[in-house]
Amino acid sequence: MFSRKLTRSIVVGGAAIAVAGGSYGIASATSGSGSTAAASTTPAASSSSPAAGSTTPAASSGSAGGASNARSGPAAGGSSGTVSGLSASGFTITTSAGQKVTVKEASSTTYQNGTSQASASAITIGEPVLVLGTTSSTTITATQVIVQPAGSEGPAASSAAGVVPFQQGAPATAKTVGQIPPDYTQGSGTLASGTTADKATEAALAAYPGGVVDRVVELANGEYEVHYIGVNWPHHIFVNQDFKVIGANA
Image (cartoon, rainbow, N blue to C red; front, side, top):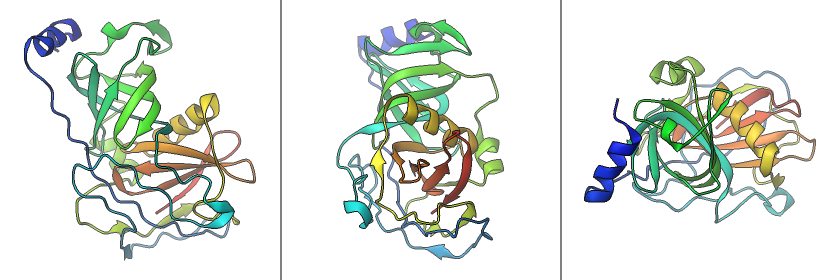
């Protein structure tokens, strides 16, 4: 395992780590009936698919409520994966679905190793981590980084959860599972932040590892829609007021 100190010294001395921005598709949401729905395997075309390497986040196209969760700038979110590179300004992770994520550290970033407080030196190549912070496309400015137990991230995790990795040009999968709030309309709700957004993000990433949460939206009924990018399914993960995942769709 490479040490963070040695690797950062090499980077500062002359080598820069190039990180793939990672393009993604965002499919239109399908409103659920509030009851468990049978999963459909019929592909649906993505409603927004930036070119490869794009770092400009796509806004939700819903119209209800004035699309208050549509945005053109960063919002609270996060991702989880295995540390795959270190740099002078942060590190990169590769999610269990193969998405590359750039993590920027700040003086205010806090670190944990499991449940214990730690320092930046705990971040080494090969470590599985959970990153929470402000997300802009596939770049996260970290507020908190948590080193997780070995084996908590890997391709098998996404496969078991049914996550469909992003593939350029591939249609999104039209699929609905679990319970979708009956009055949900894509674009409705208001952006969540702080501890609320962190808890919803953690719940979504635990249930569906592999993607990047680029915003959390509080719905009118007090539940949350967690918006997922970097995968072809799911794109919307629904979390209740107890921060339990109750459903997902494209």
